[in-house]
Amino acid sequence: MTRRHGKQYIAALQKVDRRHLYSPEEAVKLLKEISFTRFDPTVEVHLRLGIDPRHADQTIRTTVALPHGTGKLVRVLVFAQGEAAQAARDAGADFVGADDLIARIDKENFFDFDIAIATPDMMGKVGRVGRKLGPRGLMPNPKSGTIVQPDDLPRTIREVRGGRVEFRNDKTGLLHVAVGKLSFTEQQIFDNIAALMEAVKAARPAAAKGAYIKSVTFTSTMSPGIRVDPSAAQSMKPSA
Image (cartoon, rainbow, N blue to C red; front, side, top):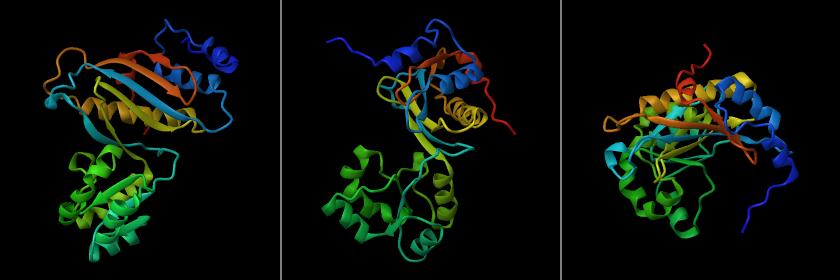
């Protein structure tokens, strides 16, 4: 069955030279020019990496603090008890608890949150709902910085609310990362993408051989992708 696109998408596509590798600055500017949605689209970066995701020592899972945030409200749930629970409440967590939250997730399928954080002493209990949290990407994990000591809870909550994003490669070695909203200024979008590129470079597995970042594409919701010169993308630096 042939996939069909609407007139607005086709008009946007005609503005993109599919054979050309754009500079990051050109691509960000073009993103704004070709968008046709009536809502505020999410800006995404898609990377094809020179890794073999079949090997555990070549997988990527880490976080990046986007300097201008994601443009979306992040609902934070914290598994903690005692003084740690109070610290999480004081820091603005949306949901804080221990056995009560675990039971709610287990029995009521409660998933009305975007990220879950836990203190180490809670992980033995949280593991009971791992089969439900894991497939949704909500299971606290040290690689994603969501298992933290009680003293670090306030800082971690501020970071995830302010724009800390977790990313990981898929089974084909691709990365798909949302980096903000199209209503951001061009400089804000550029800065966020630059921060992501620096984090991706820093996460390069030692076992990866050859070219690491093979292709880079910028896009926004419902818009065509814009191919970016990988070398130029790797040289991006956020503004001071």
